[in-house]
Amino acid sequence: MLLQRLKEYYDRLNKLEPVPPMYQKKTVPWLVELDLEGNLLGFVSTGESGKKYKGKELIVPHPGARTSNVKPGLLADKAEYVLGIYKDQVTADRHQSFVDLVGDCLEATGEKTVMAVYKFLVSWSKGYIPIPVPEEIKSNTIVAFSVNGQMPADLPSVQNFWSKKNTIVSGVAQDSGSQCIICGSHCTPVSPHPISIKPIPSGQSSGLAIISANKAAFASYGLENSFIAPTCRDCAEGYAKGANELLRKDKNTSLVAGPLVYIFWTQEDLDLPLLSLISQDKPDPGQVKNLLTTTAAGRHDEPKDDHPFYAAALSASNARVVVRDWLETRVGTVRKNLSHWFQMQRLVADNGGEGEPIGVYALAASLYRSGDAAKQMTPNVPKVIMEAALKGGPLPYWLLYQAVKRNKAEQKVTRTRLALIKMVILSKYNEQKGDYLVELDSNNVNPAYLCGRLLAELENIQRAAIKPNITFVERFYATASSAPASAFGSLLRLAQAHLAKLRKQKPGIYMILQQRLEEIQSKIAVFPRVLKLEEQGLFALGYYHQRAYARNQNRNLMIS
Image (cartoon, rainbow, N blue to C red; front, side):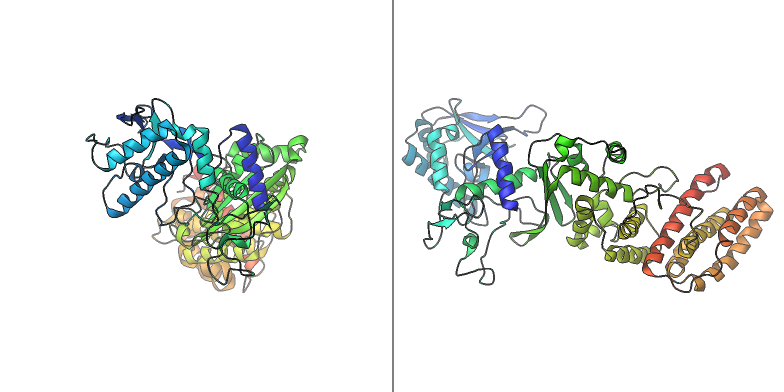
């Protein structure tokens, strides 16, 4: 179903801006301008001045899926193929393969402009043209040809040649009566599939295959490579182009989260702020607020909400694309689930102000040591977080375990990690209250929550009295958050010395902090011996809420 939807997506785009088979839109910074005799008129930059030769987007032949093998594109490619820049043996082989391909095209089409290109390439290869290549053209710069202002690649005969050239079945002849798994038509399956998918995080730069069986363990009924899932050429090209279009960085249709990339789209071309919300690393607070407000008020766009919505989670495994998740639903369902997801993560800012919404990757990265997330994150972490955003349902409890474990390891909490803890707890009970656990709740008498509040206030007293090199939290958080009874006796005794100092030196501040401390202590009958996992999460939230509240109040008290 995924491949079918990707093919449909590409077909829709191709109707709006048709691209010939096995062609692509590509930024081409430089053109080699020739006359009909193949004489070089010059190297022409298509980029605007000051734009670092970014170049224009042109429709040129797609070279197809590349591995380490020599595989040229037709009449447009990297400069190492087109001009043989940097003369080593590999480059020489690539350049010669490009020349040979143009020769094949000339033989098949007889086009004069192709003849001009071929004449130039033969002379260039032999060193008969002593004109230097502009220094801006590097080995990987895309270069195409223009003959008297005409692009030979635009000719119908050339396009037909390239389409036929890429309709090739490799290996032993296969049954032409196979049925395409995407369109259902009888076809001669193409193998390998002509276009690879890229970019996928941690995947090879040349691209990956979504259908491949190059080892016996992957084969089935004697079918190898792409023949395990027979696909006609048009569909194999279409689904890959559709995926690559969704993966473009300049579109709001993908989100990279560590080793995972999510792609998402709708059946029709809709102007949906929803898509940009999902694709942002840092969701726009205004857009999130509007989503929450309209959903809570029951306002929605019924025609758009009824449209199909698709999403897929992809990761890389060697040269293959791994489909981690697939979703086919309605826009309205995603809107509702995403609104609830953002509602669950609402949490006061560190300073007591309004906290900003958090993206999928930031939530996932909060479970890892700073700087290690990119290397250590497994695909399953962002997957389950995004799954909750799009599909709804509870977040797995192992996220809570990882978050609590990270709190103890670092002897501190972060707002992002606390937001994830809050989301796990709320999703377990399907809690719909919009203001639950967002900020300090003085009516919450849960012992774990109160113990967290108490630790924050003891730290606040310590900071008001002295400038500690190591705070109570940095020394005692792990113990206090898991076994309060064994930690708070010592903490309260230490705090008495700080309170005594404040009483003498800052009596006004002492009165306020003493009252806060008594208010919390009065609600704790007995310190729990051990806190269970969820209680440790509530402890962390209590600590954070009290700390945020204290920081907001401390501005007036001039306590740092």
